[in-house]
Structures are given as structure tokens and as C-alpha cells.
Image 1 (cartoon, one colour):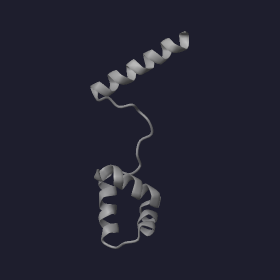
Image 2: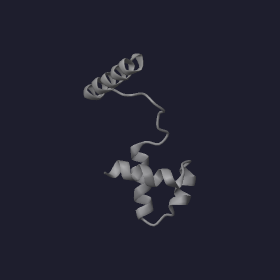
Image 3: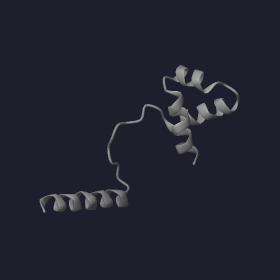
Image 4: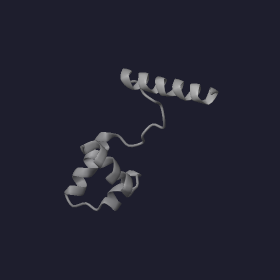
Length: 72
């Protein structure tokens, strides 16, 4: 029973924070959205994604993953 009450409290708190547009904390991103956008432009221009990611200190997978989030 105590577990169920705790779950309800957490769920309610999460709902309120989302409705208020508050941050949930978590690990800060090392790469900004503008850096990802410029990386995507370079990849579309013909630069290899692996080389671009290495030069900017990120993984190739991060470039592709974050580009999907930023673009749409």
C-alpha cells in the first residue's frame, strides 16, 4: 500500500512539472542544437559523418540521433 501511494505521488509530481514546463534535471548536453544543425549541413554537403564527429568530439551515432531530434 505504501508503494502505491508513493507511485501516485511521483506520478502527480511529474504531471505537475510537465504542465508547468519545468526541467526534470538530468545530465546536461555537451553538444548544442546549433552545433548539430551545422554538423548536419556539413554532412549534407558531402563531409563524412565519422570524420566530422571525430573533429567535434562526438560519436557518429550522436550526430545522426540528435539530427533527427533537432530537425523534427
